[in-house]
Image (cartoon, rainbow, N blue to C red; front, top):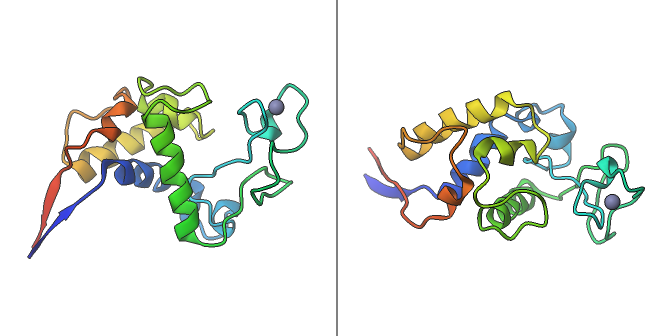
Length: 156
Ligand SMILES: [Zn+2]
């Protein structure tokens, strides 16, 4: 029997990934090892593919990306997951250049990844179970996931 601590930020990532295309091995997200479907961004802090100010390429060619979908390409799942966590941490701690603030809801966060609205309800249910906190809803502010108190679960 051992004690395991689940990071709130990892649970948040897992809740979104579990309801995304990544679970389908034939998806481009899976092929590009990009669990959160992260896009290459332009200088306006938007996915360059969706920029309405005329950007036809990303801000930097430092990151590998797919010109057809605008999705970033990672070499391994581990690298893609690390970038997913880092993107979530920036948003939950109010350091994002996007519209998402730490006071944004889970629903608004999920919209920022261009996922269908139904994803938010699924993610909230996932998080209530993962973190054992029945108060989590689609409206929960994402700053919640930066707080240091973590749930301890007992592995029998
Ligand atoms: Zn742009």
